[in-house]
Image 1 (cartoon, rainbow over the protein chains, first blue to last red):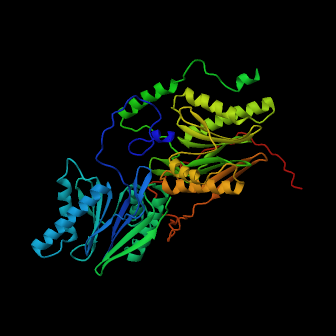
Image 2: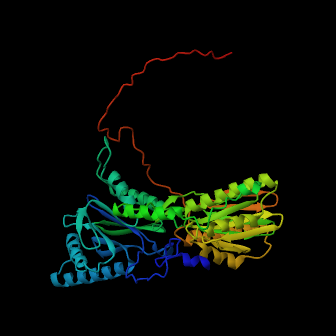
Image 3: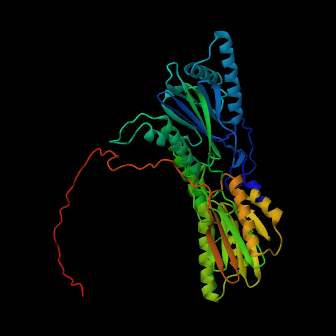
Length: 237
Length: 277
């Protein structure tokens, strides 16, 4: 098919000029798309992700959620290069077990965040191509969100979006949860129902305009009762 | 005499005035740490097939700019002449302008000769122009039309190659669409069956390709006339949000206010009666 030579190695369309023989370098990374979002409330935390796994312009899977349950009070959302996401979550799981066996207690959300930062920085010169967001309950039972960059810099937030549609979602969350750029609006604390509604609406918008986001939305709601999961369909095109 | 203003023959060989300018601009902009503007591509699925009574063309309606959807309802089936329509994939500006140019040239020809242009003429003009620009114009086009010689379907590639086939698909979703077409195409199909087949081919491109999406447009060209159905099928995914996001007046903060009264002086006064009977 003559159209196939129009695509470059990463599956995207090439520019239309012939520049002579080109040396193709092997890239160890690939971008598999996906968006992750976490919101912390007074006594709950929500981690949500879409379930589409893509590469270039194709779809590998429509059912590959990016939220992984770590403990009864912590969920991590990883998006970016799927290979590194899988390895990183395996490593975190192993370290959690080791901690539990040595210290006879589960790791808290803050401890997991600090540990993840060290793990990521350990690979400073060949990073894990993963955008992480941890959502969970802290020792006092309040919601906590920790957001990371690929080499381990992290901070505690109230809400954070990561992944391919993060630039579209973050300003919307800043406005709706942080009440930024608005005047004369009552600063009501975020209830669990409102937060879930907002997360669903925000992902519908992301799926409209970002090609890598869609198929379905997986929401994990973390409260002191445990972790509840909900799946909502999104655009499939 | 009349034909000389139909095709403007360039002075000599290839016209690369703008390429040198672009390279210079890029160097200037990169030095200033700003990116050159990325052209909007249509990342598309387009398909066409020849049936018993005419030609059926189909296209999706999503235009992407990198990974962001720039236009959810873009029209990819362009008018060339009353009996010829063209689907375009590739750089959006290129497909628009190339088809516009072709359409204008053929209108002049029609007025001059008093007859509808033939599809081969449109194909030859396109091929000339795209080859002349050596692939710099990123337009992959599917031309379909009905003329005195029958029903035709041609494809023109960005480097100027052409192909005359009974069914084809182009764009980033072409392989998905072609799978459906290869499976169910038969020569001399009935009109309804042909429309369904093109719809299914575009639908498969929309579902399997990230660069295609939203609605499906269909254009049916027969000897009797053209039926441009836009949209033939609307996307089944409606963005139903649970909450309405509206801002009351006064939400945007006013930081400073400056009122400048305009001083007007009356220069001339005229009275014109209105008939209000």
